[in-house]
Figure 1 (cartoon, rainbow, N blue to C red):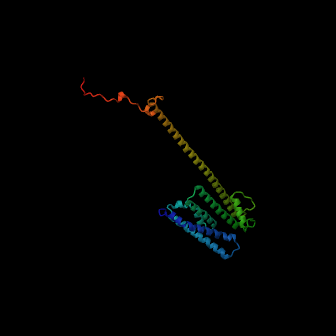
Figure 2: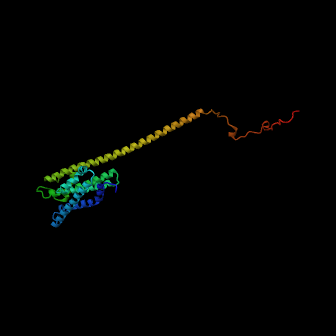
Figure 3: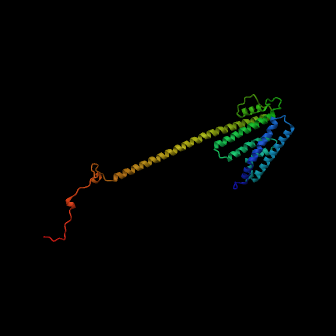
Length: 277
């Protein structure tokens, strides 16, 4: 960790605190919408909590910008963080920070690519459902002709909109509600495309691994067959160079029979130094 760039060290150290702040912001944003009849003190506390969390994220963005090696590249690659900091009135975007933090956790975890992508998609679905339900409920509850009056209606509408089913029993009537509907529909299509591409990539990678294994086995069998043919050729060459043997002749030594005594062979040699008669 000491060899990592300063920006990376900062992100690792602030990852868990920012995750806790993102959860705190989600709660502070949801309580006034879910409990509109709560005490004014609770509403003020939630508002203060939202601003405190926004200030912490703004400080985090400025700190990472100051520690970045190339600030222009950092701004281009972290445009969502910049938009959430520059536009503090659009505080529902802060809920996406929870999804982004979960993505950072997933990148550090040692998981398979498909498992990591599944984690990202699940976090994005949960975050968008929360954001869409709370946001549409906040803008449609007091609309004169609105039909989204409870959290259950908002969650049902968000789910049917993200899945592009659209039963039509609940629909936004205000301009902001329709903008939220367009965002949820596009997000649902994007998530469906990611899931489909992930499944297709898994099948393709599995087929490629099976094909590579089959190719390795075929190459090994071919090499073994070539080696057997070369050994047969070598054996044939050696057999052709050896003298032909009589298959009917059997050597006595091979049959286990030793030669008998021979008088002429076993007689002592004559003494050549003796005088002749």
